[in-house]
Image (cartoon, rainbow, N blue to C red; front, side, top):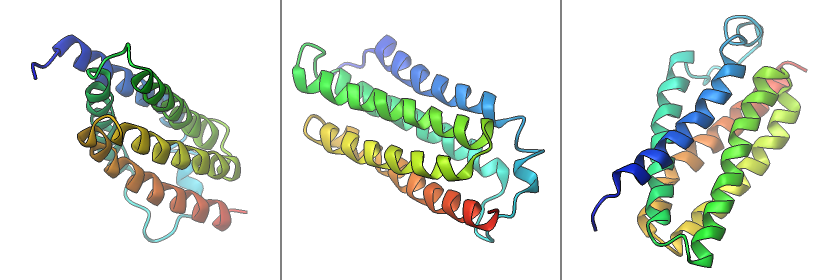
Length: 158
């Protein structure tokens, strides 16, 4: 299969753009509000988040590209990419809720929906491209950890 570089680039850029939007709401809160929160001992250093999320957004873009190349004209491809788009919006919304609105409780509620949307995306992608589904496994694992961390921060700061 020949790589369609413009499609691959577009898929990765769209995912990275979601990360940039989230970062706009995150950046100002990290040295101020987030720094003042009580966090569990297993909370990673702040620099880890940017590194991990950048890698995950790239993997998400590659994953979406693999499904997209199976044919936009196919109903199952459009359906899978629609679910992917919904989870990407939920991903961005989490940053807005947690860091922008400074609300760990509602961010936790939201991340549960995000996690479910990622699992559904993996399931739909797996029916089209096993490799695309596998590329999302690190993402669902990280969001599982992030949900637990989010819950812990919420409970420690009530």
